Length: 456
Image (cartoon, rainbow, N blue to C red; front, side, top):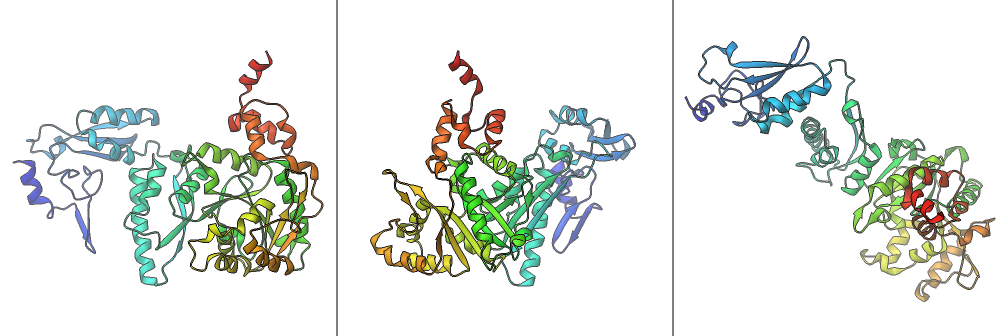
């Protein structure tokens, strides 16, 4: 009897098929996918494969090529897989010329070491739908996607992430945290997986604690006073640290700020992580590790405009917030071209930015003539002059006091050029310990061999 005829007879009527709520699964031990399809069926196919538990390890079951056998016990040949290292080889060797298409499914089924620790994928989601029934349906779909991805794409976490949104829309839910753990995911960097969440538009921002671990934004932002510093931090310099230290002292001296309830966040926007139009993941790792090594909390976001950062924080706290920035950043904020996509233009953006209990702490700069520029003498577009005066007069923009003027000549882009070109003297421009980490790990194009050749 042909396999096609057997399939037509048995596809809906055999002891292995289980159906409920319109969904069917196949419990046949020779069906690796458990899906009731002709390709996966163990009954109709003359070539079928299964994986089962055995006394001495996993057992690979291969259906004999003698399709005419009438004794079920003679239909399969068993191969015992005893070692982790040899398991994949056994599967690939037996199925290479037999059912090559089933190799991934067979590998996914193998639990090569019964004493192996559990592998876990933990995600945190935020529903965007308000109806409870819709939330239940969305959660059910996400659960199926997660099981499917973990089963078939455990060895490709980036694809696994994309599978989570199959048959779902990003307007339905947001995945803001994900963590992989266990032997199968020993080589997975959870920070890079978080970057993928932002890159794929699954969330607007992800956060890492000083230990470099993923953290749930809601758990640390809730009802906190927040001081945020945005930059490329490529690399982090003494200017960044001086801005942080001086602005932090001023911020905690505010009447509405509780030092014990204050969180400082170093934010890197996704646009600052792009190199030739693509995300440079190695570059991201370098920046995040350096900031975390200094004991800071890092946030990676999709926000290009500052008002979106403030809106994001406002989802979790109503307490006073502060934005520490340089003069050039403040001038950009008052540039209308960044708000043409808003129906209300710059006024709408400023309404969102300054509506909350927010203050801008401004770090000065020295212009090409050696003049110190601060909130008193910076120049914005003539049309924005009166608007700027309004915010300045009402105390929304204040100068950071006591800055170290020696640091005002340090620029990250210049330091980066010095590092990549093998020039000397950049070490003194960085916070303590950062230069050593750059040299040790050859970050930002640093090449010790190039320096040795130059010295010789």
